Structures are given as structure tokens and as C-alpha cells.
Amino acid sequence: MKKLKTYAAMTVVLATLGVIAGSSSPRNALAEVHRIILVHDVDNPALQPFTAAGLNTAIIGVGSGTITTVPQGKRLVIEYVSAQLNVAPGDRAVLSIITTESQYIPLTRQGTFNGQDFLVAGQTTRIYADPGTNVDFTAVVNSNSSAQATVIISGYYVNLP
Image 1 (cartoon, rainbow, N blue to C red):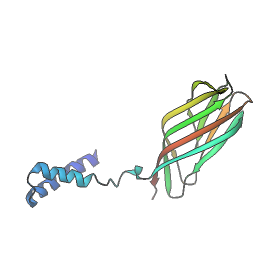
Image 2 (cartoon, helix red, strand yellow):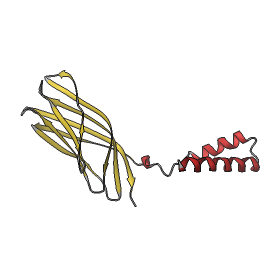
Image 3 (tube, helix red, strand yellow):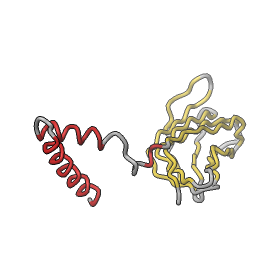
Image 4 (cartoon, rainbow, N blue to C red):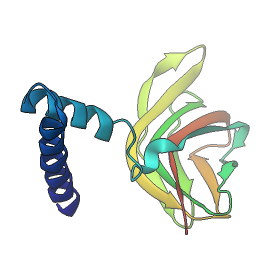
């Protein structure tokens, strides 16, 4: 709310200055102010977008992999997880993303293709990972049949002080 009030006050002041400085109308001055202000949002942490994938092609019962390690001086905010698990027909699986705690991602069976059941996930999240933290995934399948998993995460880095 404070940012909104500050933005509104800046808009009024800059529009007034534009009229005084010779813009043809308050509307033109206001349009110019919006163009100037919205060019660069220094408070927006999404200026450092991030995406990475992890793959494990040899899951027998339980499989895992490291997707990334968060660099020093950054915090990773994971906003979306996409995954595909290929399992034996009729098998069930559980998928989790692990930073400091496990976050379970729901899987939906899509059907059987080429002798394997395809389970997929597409989940909006808000998972945080601090500097030096591994971002891992774990897939647990209810049988000892061979399975494979692909997990993709996307989000952004935030600089830490």
C-alpha cells in the first residue's frame, strides 16, 4: 500500500511539473510520467529469471536427483514445477521437491504410451531455497519396475544483502 501511495504522489508531482515545463496537456504529461516510471522497476526481483531441469532415468523404487544448487548471495524462489514420470502400467508414484523440507507435487496419470504409464505434474508453487542449498527431487514408485523422471523448475533469484 505504501508503494501505491508513493507512486500516486510521484505521478501527481511529475504530471504537474510536466504541465509547468510545457507539455501540451496534463494527459500527455501523465502518459510521459507512466512511460518513464514503468521502464524499470528496481524492486522487482523477477529481473533474474531462473529455470533448470533434473533427470533420473534409472528409478527402481526410489530415485532422486539434484536440479540445482543456489549460488551464494542469492535466494531462489521456485514458482512453478513441471514433471513427467514414466512408470510401468498400473504403478503409482509420489514426487517431491526438496530444499530444506519436502514439498509434495501432485501427479496425474495421462495414459499408457509405448508400454509405460505417463504421470505428469504442472504445479504453481512458492518454494524458497537459500544460498548454498541443493534443490533436489525424489520420486518414489510403488514397485521395483524401472521408471524415469524429468522435473523442471522455474522461478527467480533474489539478491540477498
